[in-house]
Length: 77
Image 1 (cartoon, rainbow, N blue to C red):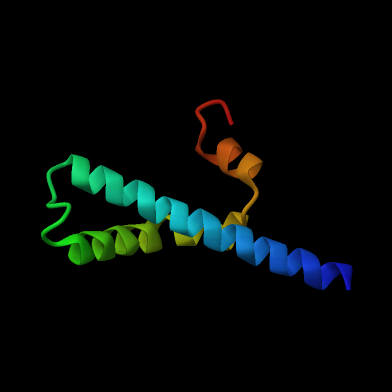
Image 2: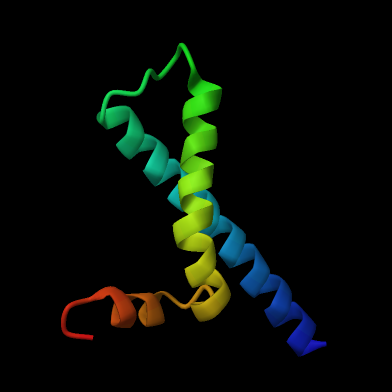
């Protein structure tokens, strides 16, 4: 019972991290000059595509463990 609840928690945290990365990429794309209101859908789908190619791979390998992410992507890790 405990292992299934931890799996559900990991999946939920992974989905939350993926959605957060989509929002961060969307913000970066808009800051670089993509139209915010005119083509919101296309801009957000581009952010989802970028998140899929970058964040999803790391989520599959490292999981939602933020400390592991910091250890991998920091200079002194």
